[in-house]
Length: 419
DNA sequence: TCTGGGGTCCTAGGACCC
DNA sequence: TCTGGGGTCCTAGGACCC
Image (cartoon, rainbow, N blue to C red; front, side, top):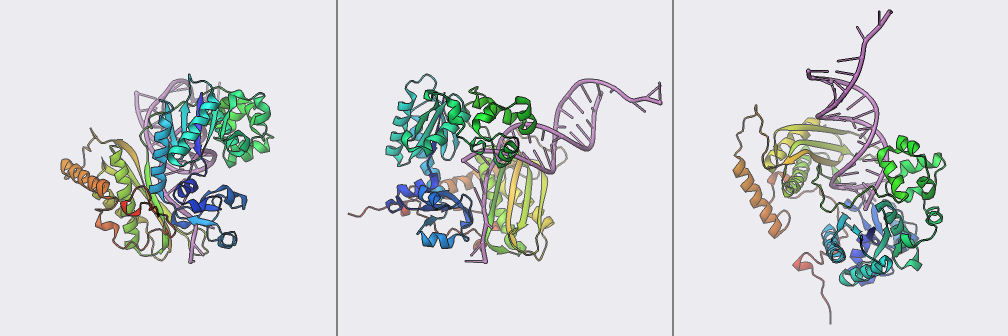
């Protein structure tokens, strides 16, 4: 038996915990670079503001309805997420943190699940200020469905235990296929063309048809809708197979020196994550692109290179990335974004060396340097020490004009209470 | 002026091996 | 007339998730 606990409008709710003036108001949180709307309060949804709507195209609407807006504040959201997950941990030993705002709980052996759900919900609210909804069912996919219904139907008070529902099919008939976990807009359109419109119809669809059009993954979804559990609880996350970093620029960039700075910066971030996972990368990919929304000359390209020996040593990765960028850079374009991707990740202990490469690097020195850099940044904050090749002024860095304080992670930004 | 970022999995096709 | 069978590995593309 699974419970899916999902925070309501998570980023907006994080902002509200420390800013009571946002209650009952239309509030949105913007993507990086203050580009798109990526979280909306219920009041903002009611105004018809769409997920992913470009901010600059909606300025008038925002002004008219006094919509409050914020840049993404991931330090705050990450910390709030930890608080919520720590609270959930008290309720079951078996928990899977599925995303920044969601967790699956195993409730095998528990009784009176709907009531237990209410206790969980009230406790999370009391301990963290975060409103959550909970769906309970014998499969993860059905728990997702139940969660969605619990969120919409106010009478349920945020919790739906699907096992207590009589005639589950008539409930599934009210759920559109596009709202099912694992069915994106392309599969939804394909299913609709074949007359499969709601969750009940998908549940009763022909196995061979589903496997042909939606692969084995889609077939699993269908079986889960029938109550047969195929997707298990994953308690410890498997190591990542790829680590990437990319950003859109705050302003168009033409100068190769600035582009070189940006890839150096992104490589540093990715390499940090790589070392945290105790891995080394064997392949590095670099890409760059102009702004596809602009009516001006377009250029995008991508290149990957295999490292002589897998490495997590930032200077070596930076040198490789910069050499790659020089190969695909073309003069005379206004670039919008660069990015890098590390793949072929292997455990850092016991690396396979290259028979033909010259191993000039002193591996133990490299490790010691990276340990020192990581420790300094861990203790004193990101970029306390950074590579000079990442630039100092970073004219290209993304916009974040409307960011709230890091209420919970910076001494200088703690909220104050006035008497 | 202005349109996000970070991931996973599956399949088909092409290369290779004996 | 007639040209096998059984595999692996890698990559690109397409779907999905938050």
